Image (cartoon, rainbow, N blue to C red; front, side, top):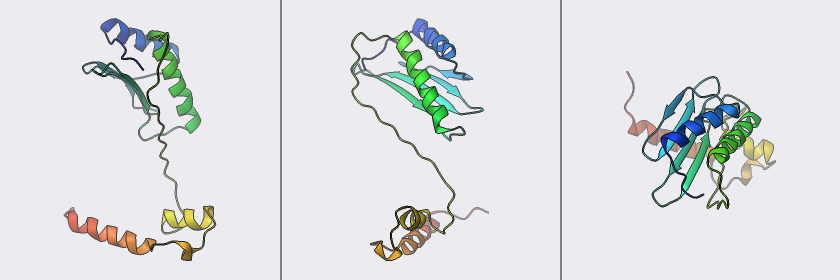
Length: 152
């Protein structure tokens, strides 16, 4: 997207637009050419807008250590986009790049998560793995143990 003008007026406008969209935040950071609205509790959320010197803008909506549902995050991300568009309406927006990364951790009933995915979810035989999971993990553990001093 084109680099948005970040000024005191647009910072205040963005804060109000985020509130009007029903989002709450408990702190704000305003480094040079950027604004970040942050919420720690009950569901962490970071809305960051960066105006790069290359005349490109970046809107990031992140939930580090998510505590809510995926649907909640999608709804909040959509609200953040609506707030952005109400303050910086683009007559002809140009999206250079978009991406989404979702990382969710789940408990596993087997010793190794990959083993459970391979056998239970993908219905593959243990012999079908072209490398030995247990040996690789043990090797990685040994390497990490050799690099880190014990905590006493």
